[in-house]
Image (cartoon, rainbow, N blue to C red):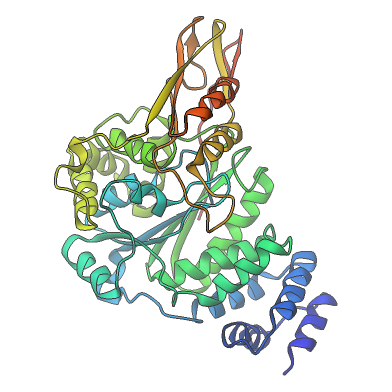
Length: 424
């Protein structure tokens, strides 16, 4: 078998066999397939697509290319979640503690932020003392003690995906739906959970801008997971506006803590609760999720997670956001908040130093935006719209971008749910 022939087949719009895909992925890892050959095949896939069966073969081959988490000792109690990337999305810090409080086992392997979307690891590490770089021994020991852990992938988990993702990033093949699906699902399969829920974002602040593309991706990932013997569901959720009032690394942890403390009248809890209920999948699940928050059980599990991973015992009694400067932004006119532009907000936080343009960039963990209003709120002239947190004094100029992210009009917008569709 030759990689040349595999590239030619896909160029000619032929479906690749499992043997061909396995040959390619093995060659990616052992370097017998050159990067330029993989780049050519990736472009052929991006142009000509893949069947659902091909996508499953690719997903499985990447998942099998390295180590896998062994969660078999926990039976069917293991759960995991994935978000396709959004703005102000800290649902992991609600879903994982709630599920743990309800007796589920949560071993979540997460990533770092790139571009306009934040990364779960960056958010956790914005809290003083917290580490997400856990040895295999510590990973399993913590899981056995507490039932929950959030850590980074080791270099030996899905090595093929790491190589291919880097190539996709520089060859204009990132947006291929089969390649996105296989990248996400290979890591979910390698992470070992039996039950998986996917949050596929759709809108201005998401990678999938339209509902049709989001649904196509969601269905493909669900089907791929089911072929691999996992219980997989997906939610398509609205990301035209930030999910939370809090945007930025330590700010988003603070926002999640506020929800776990009982401030649940917000879109962040709406989506987090829907993810939990979908994972649980039984009648009465909504009541159990609400009770896990109301009782403080979920908050205690999150505190336990932070302390286990290096935070001080009183971590939630101290300010989580420690930016050097802050400035308040006020309304110029009265009316209703028509919208808050998720992408504009995200780009402002990125400009403040709260995100990365390149993987090697350092971030400022405490910068960001705390919005004081939401879509549909009535505001008067000089009402507080938001507070911007920043570390570099010259960045005060970005306060105007924060103001411009809030659109105020005379008419109240129609209410809408953040949950667009559930796919099982």
